[in-house]
Length: 277
Image 1: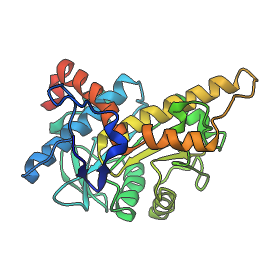
Image 2 (image 1 turned 135 degrees about the vertical axis):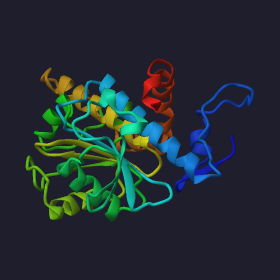
Image 3 (image 1 turned 45 degrees about the horizontal axis):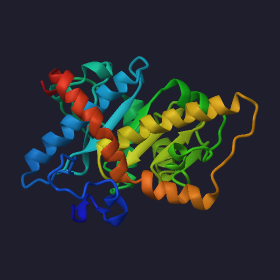
């Protein structure tokens, strides 16, 4: 596949090692669009798939948890999951379209205030970020209480090496004030993940909701792995910085996050067709 550019993400030689040289083989390709309506439908369907993937991972916790994707035609608006609807029941038909002020422009459900404050601030402060995910998960929330970064204990964890931040401001406080949202948004400069102390995990993508969702799943998994390793009382071997950076460049890109989500998309498309309702 030739180098492809989508949403400012360049896919060049570095990612070519994951792509078959034989063009006759089946391999996922990033779609392109000539009509904004088609791109909007695509983004909405993948947002629903991300919600369904969170249901499979058991990331639900009451009405907590928010996933957002910018509208391709109106970048100051974003699509999100409806409040108090289980991730497993999110469909294209019940998604909400909201603006930065929290006004619901499309949809019948309410918008979660706490989710709005953080997501709206991130989308407004970072025009390059098109998708964001947050949920109150078991291991991510537990790890966030430690107030520290992930260590490069594996190739999986290396995907986040120097690509995530720990934020301590407003730790454990429900973010309902706009100032808190903007303070939080400032911590997301040029990284794809946030560990918010005493709160939990957030991931973003400058490429797709698929990448944001997969990196959230991966960050939760890495938090679990590190806590399991630390529970042994044995100091783990860490990847040297140069090895961790090399691994991050090859397995931690936006493209690889998108690619990792494709098996999830295929499974959901085959087994949960009601998500298109």
